[in-house]
Image (cartoon, one colour):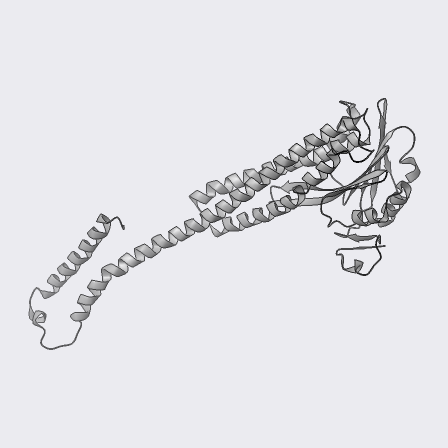
Amino acid sequence: MRSITGGGLKSGLPPGSLIHVGIASEEEAQLTVIKFNPDSLHMMDLVKPFNLESCIEGDTVSWINFCGIHDIATVAALGERLSIHPLVLEDIVNTRQRPKVEIYEGYIYIVLKMLSYDRVEARLDSEQVSLIMGPGYVVTFQERPGDVFDPVRQRLRAGRGRIRGSGPDYLTYALMDVIVDNYFIALEAIEDQIEGIEDELFSKPSSRLVATIHNLKRVMIVLRKAVWPLREILLGLERGESDVIKTSTVPYFRDVYDHSIQVIDTVESLRDVLSGYLDIYLTSVSNRMNEIMKVLTIMATIFIPLTFIAGIYGMNFDFMPELKWPWAYPALWGVMLVIGGGMIWIFRRKKWL
């Protein structure tokens, strides 16, 4: 059992080998347990060594939240306590999983991406969250402390709605719903930044703007990878193929499915908008270059006949008739000015200037 930043050491190991694949961390793992029923709520912050026997007992629903999957010893202990398949545990400690759902006998394993957008750094933070839903319990595995589950915790404390009187399937719906709702918050922040780009794009396009557009396109790629598999996950849960999910909870998963479709549509729309902005910028730069080249070409065209005249009278022949004329020099300037002015008038008439 080791904690590494890459999956290279997994090569050649037997299936089910627990090796942390992700960002190495020295933070202490945290285990919190919320046990509830319609009449009571009990919250516990366990400290190492964790008393796992107190996590699931009685006729309550237990929500076990474990932060710090780099502590694979505790992950293995939780898996043994809940009879979780070794391949599931292997996926939990591998943070490079694609969002998915797997239905096992007696429990369901779900992988999601929890996203948050940093407006200041213009960076999308992604964290893998694994959920295991079984009879009487829900276990969430996170990479690090801090999440988007506070609204669910507040609803549990307040006892509002049906969350306290429902089973683990409804709690799973509530957790997935708040994760998907947070996608909308991230998308709103990205949309605000895109609107600022639009204003700057038409007023003062710059190379810095291109870097911002490319950064946002990378952000949208990460978002798309996180939200696109949600359809398959929620369709699988909506079918109710597991006894863990009650028929009465299926419509709620269908509602999250509808939200995920909205997120996917918004992501695709924003990707198209960014691609359009990049095309507009490139077109704007091309048009600006064309305007510059047009001015330079017109200037060169005007000076061609003037250079021709100056070249003729710059030849060192002794017998050139105009060289001895008193008004030859000002006359030559007059001819040049007439030629240059006439060409400018022609260019303006043809709307080339």
